[in-house]
Length: 254
Length: 371
Image (spheres, each protein chain N blue to C red):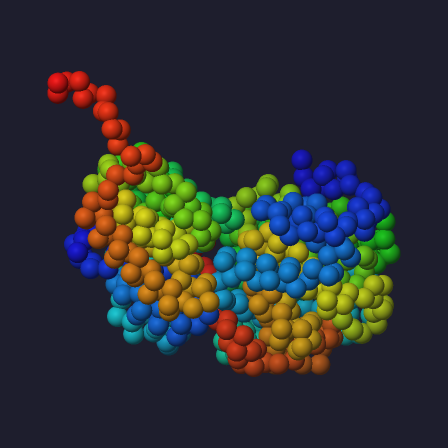
């Protein structure tokens, strides 16, 4: 069990809802993954339609709907989007994504900090998507963030934990949950993040774009469990050579 | 430095020679390259790449799935007017085509909107000719105001405008602006566009710069396939895209593949672009650029559209009409060109689902850009 704000989670795997070939495939993957929270882009929600396919499928899966601000380019737009999302989905949780660069979707640290400050003041549970920047994480804590979501590698790249050294620092220093977002392309990457002590991971492309997304969802479910168990058990130290037979300090025992 | 300056350092014939002298070795290098360059793109659109089409398609499929998932964005064009003061030898709206013209009134716009909306579309593309005295910025603003509450995403494909105009239209609710150069062959451009504002090659060439400066979310580029050598024209289009992405880095881009279609009073295509070549071009764009949106319209045949979905396409139109009032108000008005795939949206939606893809109707919200 771990907590974000006042909500407890038993699954440390969060999912995205984009890129699936059908709502049915998304629904079945969500169920198979055992996740309890799925993020959905505000821009994909059709509030005018009598029934929105995407939302219906997510509601049926009985997971916490977690709106994101994907598409906004600055803090002002993000705050506005968050307020709309709160109205549309009746939740004050927001996955804050401000990426003015549409190619690599790199998060804007300055606008993200501004938006987090403002949204926290407005009573939102803010979970910002950020670069793996340890200083920014501390600044976000001060601003009232509920968690931090540093990237493992560029979003959708499936490249894994390219930012591992910085993630280590973030995990070491953080007082709020650390959720590794973006770039996790294989269950082994997710397991590694959890082994390092990340509280959770968010996965989308690796599952949604898989040829067998349901089976991949199960693989991630198990990887996250394995990673967390290993973290709690304590990993053995890595060593390239056997212990020296004549330790440098053996003379002290003579 | 705007694109014109960069463009002027290139020479059409040199680029043509360069593309046609690419070898299978160049193509193989391009295929295995991790980060592809414009030189790689030239290899991939060259005749030497023809035997590698299957491999290109497979790579294009993988890259597209990774970036866009198994989704196809749906949109519908809505022609507002066929009035035009340009003579373009390939276009049904050409001024010298002595056929009665039509520009939709408010009531007519709303009738067309109701029909399109009832089909399920939420992304719309507004199209006009170039008739600056009647179909101008205030006409567009009025039209956008009328339809804004009905559509989540509005694109325009109208005459080139000034930066300030684009700013105002962006603020009014326009998400993207499509403007095709038609051909980057400056010398022959004039033959295809003998009269009207459009005959100014440079003004059109600089249009995407003006759109970029306005803060518009997306710019659509393309060349009219059928005018000049598609390989050379597409190289210049890719060069344009490359420049724009580096300059207006907050903007998204899309590429369309308008292939010449029959229309009233127009010339025959100068070159025929085959299906095979179109697929090669589509895949080459994807291999060059993982994030550019690639759009296939109803200009294309059922057979091609049935099979092209997994090859790199990210958006499609369906059941399109290319004349103002074509859906409901005045089905017989002058059309820009004949469409080829006449299937309606539910048939296309079914086709997309059959291919293992999800047709997406809404992927934007006015709320995200209006403050």
